[in-house]
Every structure is written in C-alpha cells, then in structure tokens.
Image (cartoon, rainbow, N blue to C red):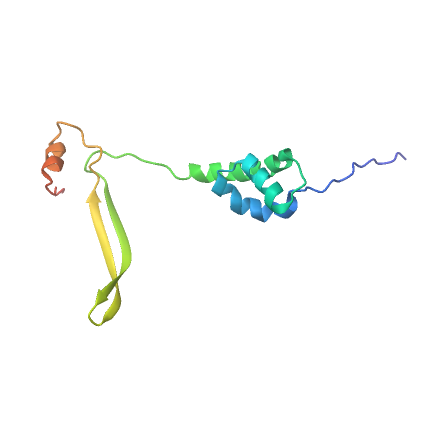
Length: 130
C-alpha cells in the first residue's frame, strides 16, 4: 500500500483578527492596504499584506452584493412623493414631551422645462392629482 502524503497546515495569521477586520473594513472602504498598516501598527500583526488582502476579499465581495440590493428607480415628474416621519422632544409649560412630526413633498427635481408642472413648481403652487 502506498503512503498518503499530506501538506502541512499553516495557521492563517489573519484568523485572530477577523472580528476586527469585519468591523473596520467598511470604515476604510475595504482598503486592504490601510487595514494591513493598522494591523501592524496597532496590533503587532506579523503576517503579510497578501494575507490581509485575501482576508478582505470576501468582505468586499459581500458588501458589493449588498449594494446591488439597493436600486434607484426613476419616475416621471409629479409621480413620486416623499414622506418623512420622526419623533422630537418639545418643551411645554408642563415640561418636556414627545411629539410626532411628518413632512411630505412632491418630487419636482426632474420637472421638464416647458411642461405644465414646471409652471406649478416655479409659482410654488400645490398640485392636486386625481
């Protein structure tokens, strides 16, 4: 019977720093160079730049996939509105209180010059739509 040869397993020097890499990488836009420099300076990292680069690669890929789930969509002038909700503290004679606030605005940033809605926006009139 032939002998089975195995390659020695080398521990990944970046493994103990994975939690730190996951937290810090988005803050430096997944720059392996910056992460490597900080690991060496702040944590005494003895591994190579390529080791950090390999550790950051899947983190960057995951962030790229997450960014793809956020898609911008366009609508025509007057067909889109934005509503903002929030809670604020107000000072009343009886003391501080929480109050709800909301605001709504029609999207007019893409108004076509010369269209009827361009005149409405220029005059600052509210537009009722059916």
